[in-house]
Amino acid sequence: MAKIGLFYGTQTGNTETVGESIQKEFGGESVVDLEEICNAAPNDFANYDCIIVGCPTWNVGELQSDWEGFYEDLDSIDFTGKKVAYFGSGDQVGYADNFQDAMGILEEKISSLGGKTVGYWPTDGYDFDGSKAVKNGKFVGLAIDEDNQSDLTDSRIKTWVAQLKSEFGV
Ligand SMILES: Cc1cc2nc3c(=O)[nH]c(=O)nc-3n(C[C@H](O)[C@H](O)[C@H](O)COP(=O)(O)O)c2cc1C
Image 1 (spheres, rainbow, N blue to C red):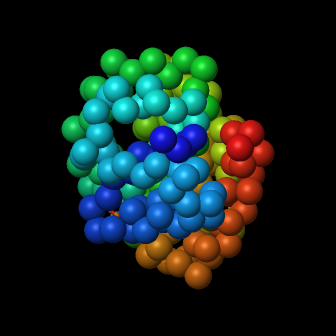
Image 2 (cartoon, protein in one colour; image 1 turned 90 degrees about the horizontal axis):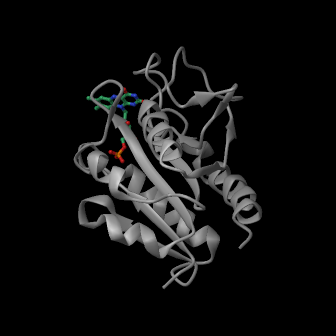
Image 3 (cartoon, rainbow, N blue to C red; image 1 turned 30 degrees about the horizontal axis):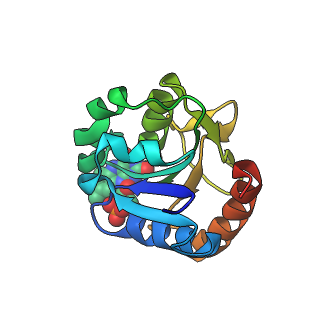
């Protein structure tokens, strides 16, 4: 079993691709286990002290549907003592009032269940009007925009993973 568990949901594949790049950047399967949330059970989270959660925002400010289905199950997971990092996929032009809301919804829930949020990310370089994923002037995790800024995705992942390696202590 790897040290870090990465749980993601996706509708059209972008968040899965980003998850795979994050895994690769950490050093591959020996460091990060990838699990699609539609195949996950609440017990799977118990295996990891370091967790990465990936979710795109859909239907104007909503969780991706598999995460929607798992949302109530989160209540049965003890996140106490776990470090949790978040990444999201969104579209800052098409959905400027709800950019990356899903990342914020999951962070609020999981931190209320004891998870310690790591991997905060600056809002510099993005242009949007509102987001549930911004707290104290920063995103609660890595914001990816494949619709408008796909050219920045690789460098954003590299920078964020380097930050997380230090915050996770791996
Ligand atoms: C109908 C629809 C609704 C969307 N709603 C939002 C939204 O509210 N906020 C946002 O940031 N992105 C929104 N998006 C953009 C998607 O999150 C984005 O395309 C993302 O990369 C999809 O990720 P996935 O391929 O992992 O499903 C929406 C896209 C569509 C087609």
